[in-house]
Image (cartoon, rainbow, N blue to C red; front, side, top):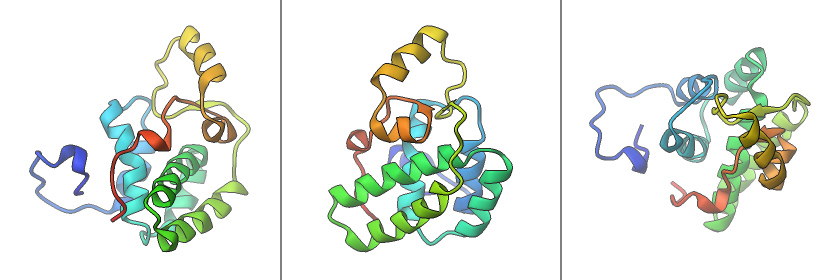
Amino acid sequence: MGYPGFAYLKTKASQNPAGVLLDALDQANLDARVVEGLPWLALTYVDMDWDWLVRSAKVRDRQNRLGFAVSLASEVAARNNDADLGQKLRRRLAILENARLAREDTFCHDSITQAERKWLREHRSPVAAHWNLLTDLKGEQLAYPSP
């Protein structure tokens, strides 16, 4: 899909970015490099079919994961001084905010141990805590430009 972290791989066919993002968010465990690319999808394909994506994420109880990915994408847009992109992403976040789940989850790393879960509860970012996710991923760690 053009993600810089996998630029060395040749792709054969283009895919629906909303479908790719949803399928990835629905995985119990993903490689860290793939997880880091999820906010890039939201950032790069900001005009994807969000109605379908949000509706489908809700059906699968993945709206918190999606909200976190969009939050990180919004942080990257702000860091890159891309006001238009940031505004679009904030509109997506407003929709997801109304569907936020109270249930604790991970950001595609369900196999973490109880000790890791405890550490992440104490050391996660405020954004991860807001979305009730156990992860140490932060927007400042994502080194890709706005599209």
